[in-house]
Length: 432
Image (cartoon, rainbow, N blue to C red):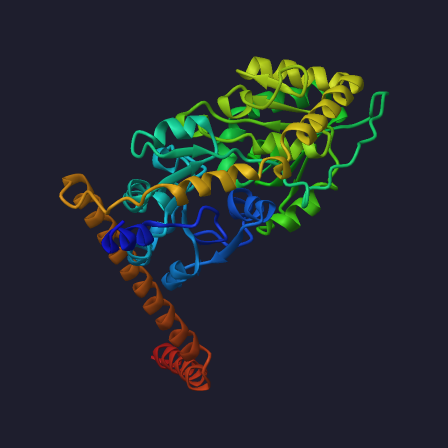
């Protein structure tokens, strides 16, 4: 082998195992998305993660300190930083992985975060195209992404038993005076919850004081919130570890997990089933791929395809303590035997090893008209967003100055003089 061939082999050689990975994400380091998709699996697989940024404070040079680079979800909103990171990864022959767990490219227009993400889609699409590997949370999401980049690996969400305390649950075999139906989720799921609100109203009408509803996080629809049977826990704990420690101690008898039937929800994962099952509490779930892949209908939970089925299965669970115990125990056992992260962390290591062992892509697509349009669009949107931030800062500064003026002694004195002048003018007019 000649000297030039040896040099080329040395340049192309990469580590077969990821010792450390640098992650760039728009979500906080403690966020559920970060823990479920990256921090938890990496810790379980013995991989060190480097935090590449905190919000828009980005350190692109950390690329040189890691074996592999991960771009998560909408991080390309920081377009200039993303471009520098991608360039550094190519220069240093570091594989570039794009991680996404929601079909953000097809958000329903009435989704609460639609306006937030619509401006970032150009950069996100380019990140998919740039990646040596894309990791996703469901088969349905893979089917969409592989139309853009065929190098896709499904890494399902699992239950991390290091932060979820899974303990046997005691079940009452006799009827309870009050049966609690619960839902846990963020405000982004309001439309999903509204889909079955008519069913929940029927349940209240049918069972009266025997039923209570409890919502964690999400503000329930007003028609439910006004009802005395509804309790709303406004907890907004962003730290996923602290949330898990809190939620596992909550009391409930039946959980619900509705999802509207649309393309976005078809690509969801079954994480809510796993979190509910950790508590040993049975649930009713929408009959969509997210839950069909995990829930065994009638054994570990119920799958409802329409409002009629939602009502039927909720009534069954309300009226039968033994059925609640049977399904709850089965769901908890299913989570423990089939869905614990510690038994599946190797999937992340294998995925990253494959990316490391793949020959680096050359940066392509420079002459592709679509790529050019996307890059221009991402750059323009970043500039517009920066200008909006600058304008907001200017407005805030002016408001601060105005507050200072309005609270100053000179302004208060001027106001007093103005009142005296008006009072004097009125007296002069009245005297004539």
